[in-house]
Length: 53
Ligand SMILES: [Zn+2]
Image (cartoon, rainbow, N blue to C red; front, side):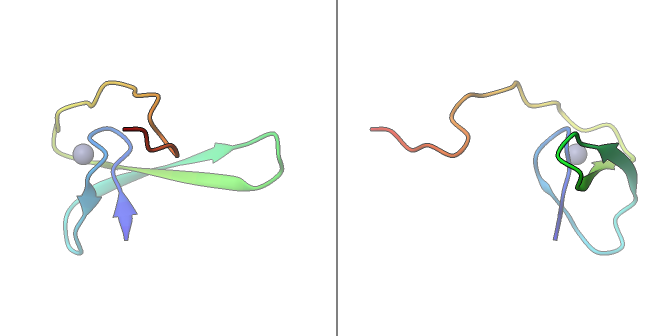
């Protein structure tokens, strides 16, 4: 499943999207997918990878 890098939502099969290759310093390349249609950009959050109550 592809996740849109802009709205952070899944991109369904058949849904138009664009792909952007990103070269990371760690050696492994990453690909970011984005919807072709304008989608709401989610603000950057710092809760990634951590769950707090
Ligand atoms: Zn999107």
